[in-house]
Length: 109
Image 1 (cartoon, rainbow, N blue to C red):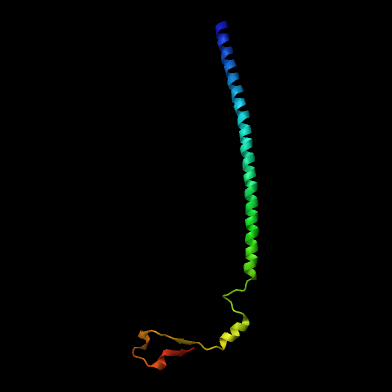
Image 2: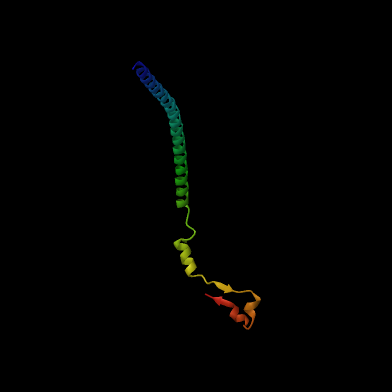
C-alpha cells in the first residue's frame, strides 16, 4: 500500500508542478500580450490622428473647390452674349472642296 501511495503522491506532485509551470507561462505571456496591446493602442491612436488630419485637409480642399467658379456653367451675362453671337464653321480640308463651290464652305449658325 505504501508503494501505491508513494506513486500517487508523486503523480499529484507532478501535476502540481505542471500547473505551476502553466500558471507561470500564462503570467509571462500576459505581460507580452499587454505590451502588444499597448503597442497596438499607440498605433491606433497614431492612425486616428493621421486620418483626422487627412480628413481636415480633404474638407479644406473641398471648400476651395466649392469657392471656385464652375467652368461648365457660364455666368448669365456670358449666356446672353452667346445667344447673340454668330459662329462661322468652315472645313479646310481638300475633301471638302471636291464638287462644291466656295459659297458652300461657310455655314452660319
